Image (cartoon, rainbow, N blue to C red; front, side):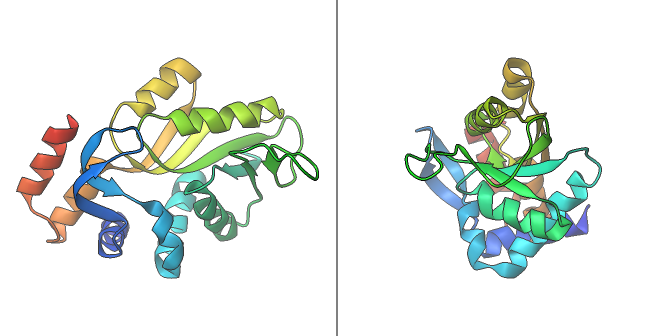
Length: 199
């Protein structure tokens, strides 16, 4: 078992970024697990752990510039950019109606290849949205890296419908396995999560 990923899963659990209970997701679906990576900005050491995990994956990939999608993906992207000493841009969720009226913040050149950093993937909708903005501005690329794949079909959907390849650092099942190995949760909880989510 990958010790660095186990340590990361434990840190996510201990800081409350991974919670168990009964939650309603953004999609309206019910879930026995909630992953909130927006809170990691409060924990500098955890943010460094996450940045290293992304950097390990990205170091084997080809790109000119990193991009990250607000809101949860943006602080992760900044941390990864600092860790790798690579430039970063980000597409805006809302078009700027004042000043320069830009749809993408940061400096880039048309034709540059970008890899998108996102926090996690469920349906893949936000990743598709981000790439639509990036490509409309003349950037190229079709790869995204996420910390966690919730295993709800988003990776397969993006590949077949948008031609976007997503690499996940950990799947939800792997997070659960790491937490079981560390004695944080038991097999019964894993079974409940997997059954309820239909993984």
